[in-house]
Amino acid sequence: MFGRRTAPVDASAPPAAAPAKKPVAAPKPAAKKPAAPKKSAPKPAPAEKAPAPAPPRVASPANDGQKAQPVEIGGRSDEYFQTKTTIFNALIDTIDLSQLAQLDTESAAEEIRDIVNEIISIKNVQMSIAEQEALLQDICNDVLGYGPLEPLLARDDIADIMVNGSSRVFIEVGGKIQLTNVRFRDNAQLMNICQRIVSQVGRRVDEASPICDARLPDGSRVNVIAPPLSIDGAALTIRKFKKDKLTMADLQNFGSISPEGAKVLEIVGACRINTLISGGTGSGKTTLLNCMTGFIEHDERVITCEDAAELQLQQPHVVRLETRPPNLEGQGEVTMRDLVKNCLRMRPERIIVGEVRGPEAFDLLQAMNTGHDGSMGTLHANSPREALQRVESMITMGGYNLPSRTIREMIVGSIDVIIQAARLRDGSRRITHVTEVLGTEGDTIITQDLFIYDMDGEDENGGIVGRHKSTGIARPAFWDRARYYGRDSELATALDAAAD
Ligand SMILES: Nc1ncnc2c1ncn2[C@@H]1O[C@H](COP(=O)(O)OP(=O)(O)OP(=O)(O)O)[C@@H](O)[C@H]1O
Ligand SMILES: [Mg+2]
Image 1 (tube, helix red, strand yellow):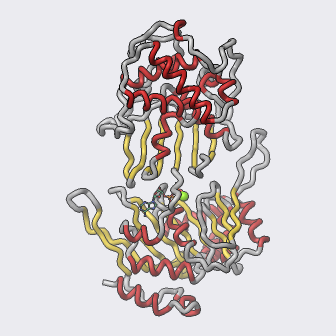
Image 2 (spheres, helix red, strand yellow):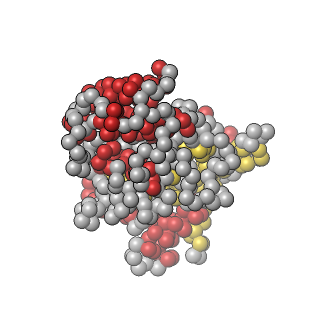
Image 3 (cartoon, helix red, strand yellow):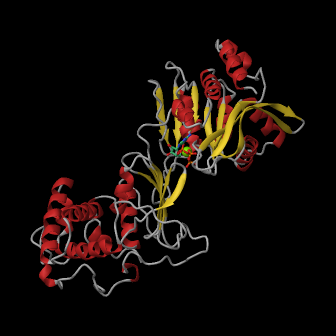
């Protein structure tokens, strides 16, 4: 259903038996009816070729953003989209995309500009210079880049881009999800762009293999799930890569952690304390892990294992490893477990696992209590206690056949500190707990909070008011270790200052 426009739109793909079109040359708009900006049903159109503002097929009551006004990106009106479709169709009828694909991006953009300008004048479309420039840019983006996503990709304040089919594009800015007015011409165009993104990393997404992870050239993490699995057109999710990663100082400025809390985290990082960072989706786990790695000494050998490399360690002695999904024949997969196991043969001093989500939990714990102190990882959980339960169930599900008591003892022997990150309902991201894992009592794991975020309520703008405070523990379990590294007095001062 979505392959029809693939050949014409995707400049990088060989065109499907393109009729003898002129190379990139003069347009032949005469073949088309001169049209006013409003185009009446162009060709015997496939269902998805209806003009973009088509309503979504399923309108659930909770349907995203029905109440809120879409955020204007680039100020495009419905009329603009119709004009663009008219001109775009004329362009596709005119140029030979196989020839265009042979040009470099700049020359191809130049060709497109010439032809579009000519179409505009022949069709007598009324536009201001600024509108014409915007249209040219949009069309170049459609043919050569990521189409309507380009303006969103260019913005550094956007954390996530979420496309739910061709006509609903959401962004996350400042912790809040907003509907935008960005839309694709149809589901076929969206699918083409998804295909273009994943083909850059040698993958494919179509009805036969509808789930795909990829990365944009700038490092942004991409997930695509295509029809028929995703019912209303492809769902594309992009976690934008931030060139300038947030630092612990930034987190303090945002109020995500207090200065005393940040000091404790610094000591945890520097004193080689095994740490798990727990949190929900998009709560800031990876960002926090990246900040924590900033406290690692420069002479330590660090190995990082990630599904998609996001961490940016500044130390000189770092080996970065990345997992690999299976190829189209289902072969060649390298899992996180493979990487973590291999790490152990690479003489690491610390192992950093981007996200622990399966049986590699066992290998990470083993690494943590066999001399790789200061190893770290993140995992999805809503509280420190839940994080411990998740580690246990990951190990159980890994088929190790160990009694749960043994697993718990292993957890207690390996993990020292859990840092909990959360995205609160006002959109702010906060570190809500710094919790120590102390030991077991019977079958229960005993933990103790060192720091918590205490919520007081809301201010007049709906922002959450609260503060980070120490729970009054003067001597955490890692005290001796802090003393060994000569950081005990700093630790005492930070904990004292944060107590009530
Ligand atoms: N404390 C913070 N304050 C403001 N923005 C933050 C904070 N921490 C992270 N962010 C931003 O939130 C977004 C998500 O962060 P991050 O990738 O660290 O989350 P995550 O929990 O690892 O997400 P996922 O579960 O998808 O892996 C990023 O754009 C990041 O820059
Ligand atoms: Mg992450």
